[in-house]
Image (cartoon, rainbow, N blue to C red; front, side):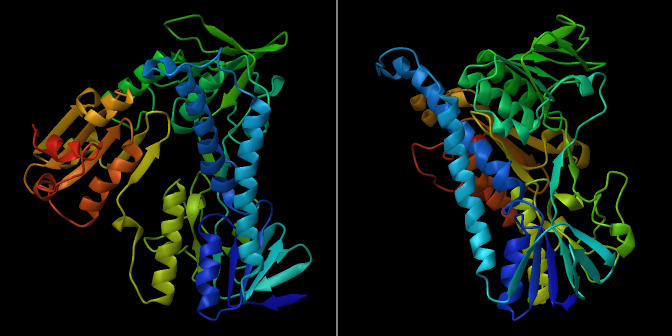
Length: 456
């Protein structure tokens, strides 16, 4: 059985459903194929569940600090992990079912569940059905990398997906990987009450950031009792009774960390290996990411790739922007490009990091005269009032053009305050124009103009 469609969308992550909505609204007959969970990584194992856990962990953390604010609680603070997981599951299920209900009720959209595999550049097979179209959009996302490490097959390790199934508290969680995913889980479980050790093979945490950002984040985590082991080499595992021994062989500290649970957070890989891309002639790079141009077209005319599987962004917001680029170019005659967007993202430890544009190191390498403004959160009134003074604001400006090149706001509200800088950059306005803008007091954002007034 073969059915022709105006468009086929593979994957119901962040880009796929919205694209199906635009295409059907334009009068197209669309097939959307999802093999497992509607909503993709963000809804099921990424943003929504992790930030729900972050919120629970913050509540526990704040309750323990109640006396700092003159609030008296009766007895020690406890965490009910069954209730924490149930709350997380409700948030996920509501969002997932909302996406599925929307798609199944979308006029002009046929939803199929199963594994999609290319039969040719214009046809895919789902079970016993063959679908054909001149327009095929791939939005299959990614998953955790399971690296080849000695002893890994002898122990039970968690990933960002399987850790979501826990409804008990690990006695000692060993996190392998000192980047964004690993650090969020490290702080979450430390605040729930676990002993936590972060093992990173590099010389510092989140090595894509500037050294001062990495150092401050390390300080924030260590202040909460999280052990950080850097420069780990020859990482391996061994069973130690009911526990797991993680061999780190660091120059500073014991060569092995004994934990009850191990979380692998060492990277992501695209879900492209079982799509039959070779039968369609779609090119991938050495890591399996689908090769796309600046408008997200693959090397095969009529096939696009959006979201994590194209290697052009690993975030929900970049995936959604991929949808916008494809839809606007296809339906509105626009010429939007991936290279037009400004890099921006957050690290959602507490306090969070909001990032936009270039790091200081990148700016110095790419531009001649660079000016930097920096203000510690100890000199931000809102942070002082909330009793959360860790971190700083840092803004990088081109000394020749007065354009803002990048910024990092590590501190209370940093994930929200960064958008004022991001919007200024997107509008092409100068640092001076932002410095002359009146902001609301008392906020974190009001110190952005002040920081720009202290460029050096």
